[in-house]
Length: 331
Image 1 (cartoon, rainbow, N blue to C red):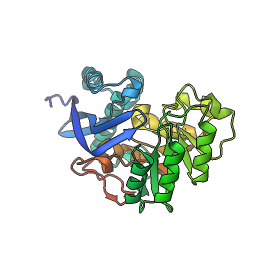
Image 2: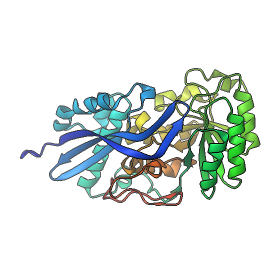
Image 3: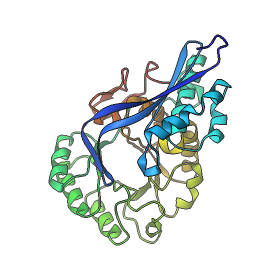
Image 4: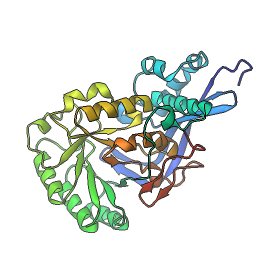
C-alpha cells in the first residue's frame, strides 16, 4: 500500500488437491490449479479467483501474466466498466472483475448483491458431480451420492447408454443432469438422447463439439439441451436459439461477474433456461456465482465439495444445499 492510497494489484498461482480424481471426456486431474488476484487500497483487500482452462488455450502461467500486466492500469484507477474492454473474456478478467467487485463492496460497506442492485441469493440446491468411468464404477459412486437431490453425470462417448442406465438404477430418486463435454457425434446423438430420456434425465449439457453442433437444430430433442462450450458471453447467445434450450453461465468463460449478470439477463430475454456452473475450484470462485442463482433453473456449484480442502471461511454446504457467502470470504 502506498501513501497516496493508489490501489495495488497482486496475483499468484495456488493449488488445491482434489479428493481422489476428477474425470471428464477430456481427461482426469488430481488438483485444482487456480489463480488469485488481490486488489488492495486503504487497508481493504478485494479478492477474485479464476481457473485457467486448457480447453480454451489458457494456462496458469499465461493467466497470471495477463493479470500482472494490468498492475499499472489498476493503480491508475481501472474500474469494472473499463476492464470489460481492457481485457478479453476469460479466466484472467474474471479474477480481476471479481476482485474489483469485492473491493467496491468493502469500501461501500455493502454486500455485493446490494451494490450491484441484484436480488439477494438464498440457500439453493447444487448439483453434485459423478466423474466419468465404467458403468460399474459410476454406479458405485452414484450409490454413495444417491441421497443427493441433484446429480450431474459426466459421460464420454462409447458406452454412455450403459453408463446412464447404471447410474439411474443406483439413484432412482435423484434428478439427473448429464454432461457429455462434447464427446458425442451426430451419429450417436439421437440414441444417446433417447437413452437419457428413458432414464428420466432432465437436461443434457453440450453433447456435440462447439462449432459442430448443427445437428441439434435438425432433430427433435426429447429433453432439454444446454450449451456450455458453445456459449461464452452475450455475443454468443443469439446464434444458439435453434440448437439449445439452456445455457451454462460460468464466470471463467464470461470474464467475470459483470458480464455474467448481463448475460443472464440477455439469456432470459431470449427464452433460455439458465444454468450457473463452475470449474473445480475453491469457495472463492463459487461465491460471486451465487449472485446468479436467483435466475438459475440449475445450479452446479459443487467445486469445493470435490476438493480435499477448501479456503478458510469457505461456503457453507449442508448436504447439497449451498449458502450465500459470508463477507469474510467475498462480497
